[in-house]
Length: 548
Image 1: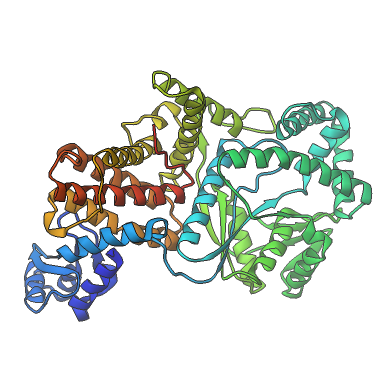
Image 2 (image 1 turned 45 degrees about the vertical axis):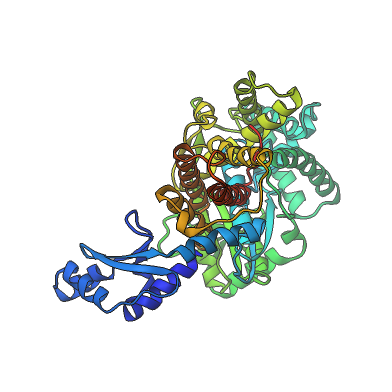
């Protein structure tokens, strides 16, 4: 409905209806700042410009009135808008907010090296990517998600060496692989001669030596078993796991090298090197020993992506910015569609920086267990079964992690504090889940009062109810913004705002203990809020709890 309101405002403004100057406002349902643009261009006073524009405007559609205030042109929705918003939410239920964007989209995210378990940095990547995919699906796109398996290069050769020297323990598979990888790095520092074996493994794997190829695939698959278990618990799902080595195996990497060579930009002096204008660091495509580097294989992967998808999204850590910039430039040179890249800054704990190679990391598994333990402590006094406590604690813990990793813009650094993340009174997933559970509780109690057909009426709305309905109407609009900009934190911010609106309404106005007409009106509003909170939480991969 809010999107329709925007269209009505554009129609009313006619020649002044540039969407860039129409925005949300604390002082109106929508406002236009076009008068300030005209004033700047003409030298006239913005207030006078706005007054003159408003004199020639006539409300239509969902707009009841238009006012000029200090240069701003303010628009207010009518009662019909309020009624249609709530009725459409109650009618559409889980489909409320769905948009009709078209096209095939590939979202590649997480893609952590299979040399150990996911750590908290990987979790931010996974949650961001998963939320982006959910948002794009809700927006109407045909979405596929990829985990790109980095099974080549030195790190994986060292992982292979670790297995040769130490085997794997009986820990969870990804943790067992990490233990051997860490031991192998220690051994390499003590015995530098082992570097020859690492290089031999790299050469044999890339040349598709049958024995090495099969063993490496088995090692990587073993690590992935544990990684997939972690992702499943985190409520992150990938449609396909794509092997980096497949692009060597099927000849795609050689095709890319040939294309680049034909562009006359490759320097060959044993290694294959490209010097890109504007970059201090050269791009090495192939080593002197004949093995390719990651960027060559990544170019082949992106060339494949470009043939099948209208929109390509990569979620990458900030430490990949140089690689991504070089990749984008090389794709441009060989005339291949470029991806949209979402960069994220790192996550830290009070313990400090992490390193898988040195064995200093906090795994996603440890993080989830710790946060669940804290959540269980909060539920100790609740009069519910232990099974219910465990289920709620799990949902609250995963929700807390996912929300805290997605609630701020990706380019901002996060320090994760589980005590704050579980605070039911703060700006957290727990607060939103609790608000949803409160709405469910009100509706359950309404059944005891003999709840009849819900009947929302615009003319019964008080100030808080009106504010809540206007915010409910914005769910499709916020989804559209998040899908266009690939910014899941828009949804997180919206849900916090909606929860705050609902709790303010509930604090000030009785729902169950009022006369029948008003009760049915307010229960309709409660149910509409429940639906939107549920749909919004699911976009963020967070379970909307009915009891807490």
